[in-house]
Each structure stands twice: as C-alpha cells, then as structure tokens.
Image (cartoon, rainbow, N blue to C red; front, top):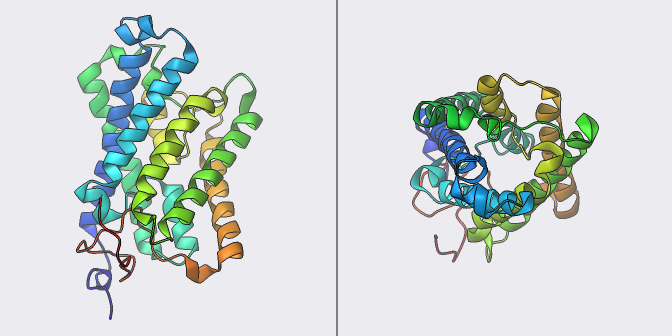
Length: 268
C-alpha cells in the first residue's frame, strides 16, 4: 500500500506549512527576546542575571517549538523547520530530493518573512543592541568554539529525535524531547555560538542585523552534526530502524514521507 500523498511530485501544502512554522518560530524569538533582554522590559530588571535570562528564553523557545510540532500544520509537514534536518532525513532515504530542496527553500523564505513581521510589529525594540534581531554570532571564544558548540548540540538534538521517534512506546514525546533539548541548549550553550542549530534561522536574523560573522559555521556545523548523528544511529540500530521523517506522526494525517503509522500510540 502506498501513501496517496507521496504520489504527487510537489507537496505545496507541506512546503507552505514549513515556511509558516519557521516564520512563527522567528516571530516568537524576536518577541520573547524583546520581552526578556530589552532594558525597558520588566523581565530584564527582575532577572538581571544572564543565565536566568537565557533560561527563561530557552523555556519560551522550547515551548514554541513544542507548539509548532504538535500543531495541525506541524503534524502534517513533519515540523522540520530546518534545512539541516531535512537534508539529514534525505540522507536516510526518508525524503525525496525534490521535497528536500523545496523544504529548504521554504525554511529560508519563512524565516526571513517571520523576522520581517517581527520588525514590523516591534520596530526598534527588536533592532536594539540587546536584542539585535536575535542574531546568532560566535561568542568570546570565537568561530572555532562556535563550530564545536553547534556541532555538539546538533548531534545531540538529532540523536534524541531519532531515538525517541522510532520507539512506539515513547514516540509521541518526540516534540517535547526536542523542545527540552532546545531549552537546555539556549540556557547553557548560547554564549558560545548563539544556539542556532539551523542555517535558515541564522540567515533570517543576519538579513536584518546585517551581521554575517562566521556564517559558514552555521551552515556546516549543524548539518555535519546531524549527519554524523544519523550515521551513528544507523550504525547502532540499523538503517531500517528509522521509520519516518516526522516529529509527530499523528494518525489520520497524510504523510508525504511514508505510510508508517505507530501502533497503539495515542496522539498528543
């Protein structure tokens, strides 16, 4: 039995959902960064410690990611939101080349539009140095440390996603697990690289901040980290152990990747 969605060469609905998903993520990032880091915000006054601010930002963005993953459009498209993520699932044979390219283009376009909307709504608040369009830039240790940081967190994120999503008893928690990872990374790793994990997310901010420092780091390190994690997982579990490219494989929702449905797993 084949998936009726996969018969179509182009999947415009899913492409738009991916663009919308990263657009929402970038708008959320800009809004929460203003709320937490801008000097005029009460949060910046009551939580002056950088680690407390980063932890709060991490929680907000983790919850944003969880909301997108379990939303109707995230459940339909798979909620990749990230070209490196899509490329990794293409390498695992779970996406066509056409869908991989289209997803990636959608991510870059959606991220840029989301940041543009954040600027239209928040104006100079999101442009202030304390927020800086939530740009991801190397920290004081420079580009080599940022590369290492991005590689490690991307490796961990993809490994967690693969481990959880391919076990029917816990697969419904894949989006929550990814959100927890993102929260922890922002709280602990962001001083090193800014915690991008995502070339499209970095470019969306850089377009408006006009800061392109070490852009190569944010293209190569997340992609290499995720590809390495996928290789490690398939070496340990076997290539057939990867069932699908979705973070939330909800019953009754068309899937352009497969005809796989997790048995006895309630949807969140």
